[in-house]
Image (cartoon, rainbow over the protein chains, first blue to last red):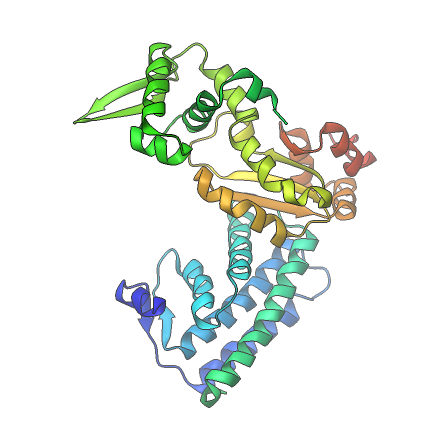
Length: 146
Length: 204
């Protein structure tokens, strides 16, 4: 329901996906998850890459439901919030992801070095969970796309 | 337990001052104040009348509405705003927010523009936390207060070992934060010196 409402408000656009697109998004998420383990990266950059993986998973779920975010300032926020309505992700996990989204903005634009290694590892664990989650969900609800 | 501010001000006055002086750039209608503080309108009206008379708060008519705002021109403004900031305002709210995580936090404090006093009403709140708590736990604890305060809260969470190691390595952000003024939410200056280790003393 919420997704339809967002579309009516112009926040989401209808989108026709394909097994190929879903496979590409998941492969890109896997690549990000592997890249964020590269030794020697800063905590901020690792967080950024892992966040990217999570965003791709959320985008894949949204695409499977027939939507993509409209380009706007808040499209990252919207994509993350949509996880509650695609995968049925717990509000606390959505909040956590959104916390990392904000942290990524702050550390990229305002202040360098506001990310701890521990936070980067937490973001990576979260993204890995989400990656498994989205695949399980696709198998259950959109097996035609796998 | 009563805190210092509870001894200094009756509860209604404390809440009004915390709201108005905590966000001096905002102007408020009576009903907004009632909603934000959870106080009855009659109570708010009575208290505001006193604060306006004392010139701590200004009242301005706009159409048929009256808007209330902290009076920056009051000679008491800087001290009073500082007092609220340290006690009933932001810091107290966040202290309350972190209370459930008390066992997992060695030290936590506000830093950045909020603390210097020159902060705009809408500016973000930077919180540094050192301890066993995770970013997820801290974010969850703070998020309801983010709504209440009408501010974005940006926590940075460090385990003690990582914090100490990065301070010793001369991490720019951490050394800057150590030098900046701060308002402690959990622990104090001594606890911070303890977690920061000897590296902090050598900070240029």
